[in-house]
Image 1 (cartoon, helix red, strand yellow):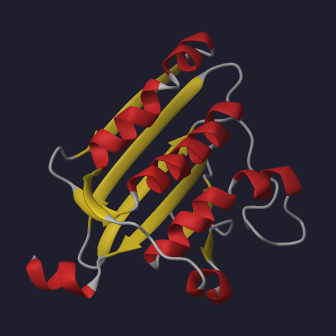
Image 2 (cartoon, helix red, strand yellow; image 1 turned 90 degrees about the horizontal axis):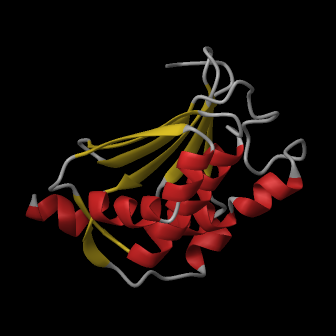
Length: 169
C-alpha cells in the first residue's frame, strides 16, 4: 500500500536518550485485547466492526502499560474518525528485524497532514499521539501514518528486536 501520503516518523534522538523502559516479555494479542475491551460499547454504539489478526504466540520485550496506552491512543484516533460506522482492523506480524503493528480504519476522509510532528498538523492530533511517540522512542522504533487511497488511515508501529532477543531467536 505505497502512497505519496506515507510518512515515517523517527522520534527525536534527544527524547529517546532521556527515558528508559521497564520491559518484560508480553503477549501482544493479550495486550491489544485488554485495550479493545475498553472500546467495546463505543464500537457498538458507532457501528464499527472490529477485526484483530495477531498470532496467539507473538511476544515482544516491552513496557506493557506504555504499549497499551499507545494502542489506546491510536484506536481513539481511528474511532473518532468514524462517527457513523466503519471498520477497525488491527494486525501484528513478526518480521526479520522486529514486530510491526498496524491499526487501520475505514474513515471516509484522510488525515489533513499525515506527518505527526510537522507545523501543518493539527496540534490536538499531535498532542493525542505523544504517548505513541514516547513508547516508540523507548523501544527504538518508528511510527508511520498513511492515508489509504480508498479512504481511511493506517497507523503502523515498527518495533525492532533487541540484539539479545535476536540472539535468542
